[in-house]
Amino acid sequence: MDHTAPFRQIFWQTWRDLVFVHWAVDPAVVAPLLPPELEPDTFDGAAYVALVPFLMTGIRFVGLPPIPGTSRTLETNVRTYVRRRGTAREAIPAVWFASLEAESTLAVLAARWGFGLPYFRATMQYEHATASDAAGRALATRKATSERRWPRPAPARSLVDAVFAADAPFAAASPGTLEHFLVERYALYARRGGRLLYAEVRHAPYRIRAGALRAVDPGLVVAAGVPAAALAGTALVHEAQDVTVRIGTPRRA
Image 1 (cartoon, helix red, strand yellow):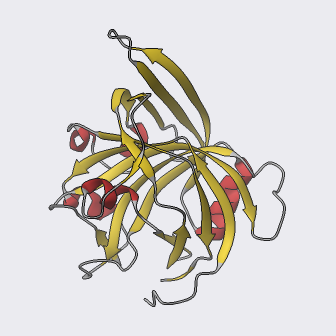
Image 2: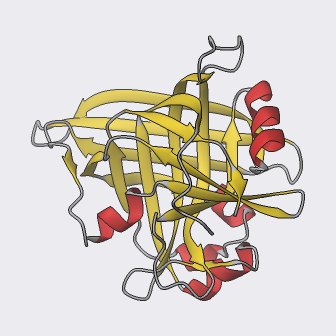
């Protein structure tokens, strides 16, 4: 595939209040979820699957005002990291979405039709709070829930209840680290009508901080085809500051 093709933006979006929950899994767990052209991208021999709740705002086509009912939605996606089969490293690190949940019916329909992405309509909530631990330290809590409504397979649900030290600084991940491998991804693959599509996304590097889970229900990850037993290990949890995103036009991969 020609990675030198010019970037042509189609959408603006702003991603807010992102929480990344990652599990290390055997690459053999991820491989069956992928189209034949792709294989798991790995870090020190491990593949990763993620549950990512966030708020998306400012959704609009380039040069046009927002379309009522489509400019703002909660989202929770299940993602993993991929490369073209037989390629040691992608020129632009890429993501494969196993599923994406959103509140907005119009956003779900548009993404399914335009990108071939496996979006589902869901009932969702996202709560922010500040609390104190036993030592009096301020904690920032993020609690996101999602319950799939349509299309099938349904029902499927998830919960992410994460906590972060309120005074912990956000910082860009250093190249070569696991954190950089996980979050600094600027392309996606999708399949529409039997064709593999590819699109670039552009935004400032994420500024992240680590946290911990108070509770998690990875039901959406399991519904995507990852066995629950593969998620028994300790999850990595990060919060990211907001980014304004340019979405590129999908093209044939």
